[in-house]
Image (cartoon, helix red, strand yellow):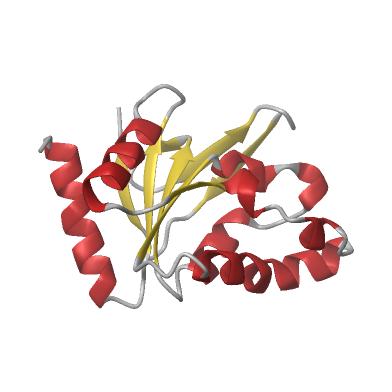
Length: 154
């Protein structure tokens, strides 16, 4: 098993026991984030879900203020149907789509209260700042990664 997969498996085992259950796999496009998640899905039998699947018609029908408030419940219910202790999420960039007006990192944190979430995060992490650049919106998002578990893929 490659070293990165072993590191991520150890992080997941620790996250199962912790209150903080969000793990971000951070790297630029083409760095192997999705490949790593697919490998985990194959090895462990966990479901790899594209965030595109989480944007339901019910969510889109809500006004933006309600959408921010209700997204964790609506998406959480969809994820709960998988009945898995670990959920692998890819295509997180969809959550940054301006028309949705979501707060992606906050949303992922809320979802991880129910189960371990391992999300492929396209962007950079320098040890202090977590960044995501949304190419469609031509905007950059910066976060302070308090209490986050991050594995960086180069």
